[in-house]
Length: 443
Image: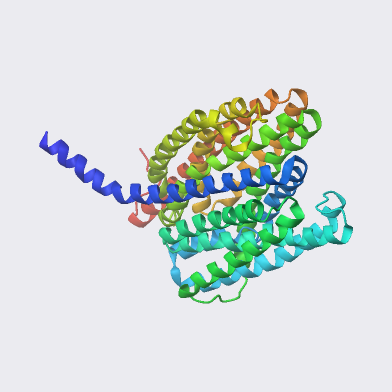
């Protein structure tokens, strides 16, 4: 009995640092998520249905563009700096160059296209000026601010990474509360100025916090551009898929259903942060473990899968139980909010399962396979969810979401399993060659 207790205590001591790190990581992301929901609620109430609808439409587009900005270079920063901190200046310069170049292109494209589609101000000149502020804020500045978190993670400075996430979320909530509740901001044009000023201050503050890590060395690593694009495209396709349902619902459903579904989507998407909290902790270690073959990371990935599944279930149950209180935050006019939330809350479990497989693929540098799985799933998913939503809103929307996420789960783990088997066979073959043992000995 004493031996069992001793083994249990040793095992607890071994996993305690990881558990504490996850508690801090998830706590910061959940806190940031709660702050974002409060910001969302403040803007929803203060801007009114019409202005808030315009704002949500713009943010949906910006959420796609922000993944294009930088061409996925943040991934190689985490992957390569986690293995060798000396390469950080080069990786930082690589990121800043790509963010600047792609950011200018996206902002210019947005100024030329979006004013013909979205009206942020009735005056054409003012509309373009507001659009410019919104584009710079929600694409370039957001990308630069989020890069801070990735830099700290690459250096395994998770406490600083957590502080950057929480600080960003609280700053935006404070800006929304000050602008809307104190100064009476009630239009998107007015909010754009406040939002821009808030993001500029945060960007400067975070740049100052990174000075101790050293200045950037401005170089382009051409071999990483293709990998970065492959890493970014799944997020882009996912963003497109996640907005296809909103577009079709806006055509075929009532405003109340569209509003309730939009809020639920925000909540369920935010619930993925509990999974992200785990992934951001384990990604650097997976990159190190898989450096000499992806099969070396499979043991760790199975343990992460168990943890991720448990976290997904806990998150889903928490959302299910808290659903009845949501109208108190967003307003009683959202009559479908509770039922929609309880239907969609279980999606986070599927995301938890497939995200482990795709994180292993990414950490091992198999971005082509990762992109093929997620891009195909999201591209086909966008078509499926649009058709199902058109055919039977909103029940068809809910069913298609679960079908899509389930398909990604199956595909991702099949591909990972086959790559692990191939990697292990290649490693065994090298060992046989070095030892002088024939690969296929005669009977």
